[in-house]
Image 1 (spheres, helix red, strand yellow):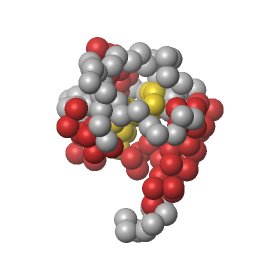
Image 2 (cartoon, rainbow, N blue to C red):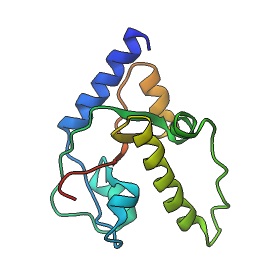
Image 3 (cartoon, rainbow, N blue to C red):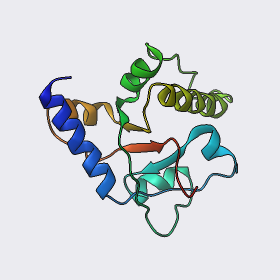
Length: 144
């Protein structure tokens, strides 16, 4: 890892640890154990998943895997995954299964979180700028 990439990664980790994060509690009580705890950068983004908690939360991560979804899959699995049709009735179950596999693979590789950016946000990150929007999955959340 080049010094520039290391510095940029440390800047992202610092940003993650100092900002407020929004969370929608899952309906499955074992969801955190299976998939980790998901956070959104903003209340509005979090509303996609349901009603966010009234107050934002703070996190502490040290070694997240970072990238857009394709890059994260490449790092964790060696290649991008085949996504079912967006109209498939099995899409949500597929997503939960992949999230669980991502958590296990990331923990095996020594990561404590997964920080996913949009493709344009990841391009900005690679150019040395911090993205404004990140989806964060803390793999072993405390207090969950």
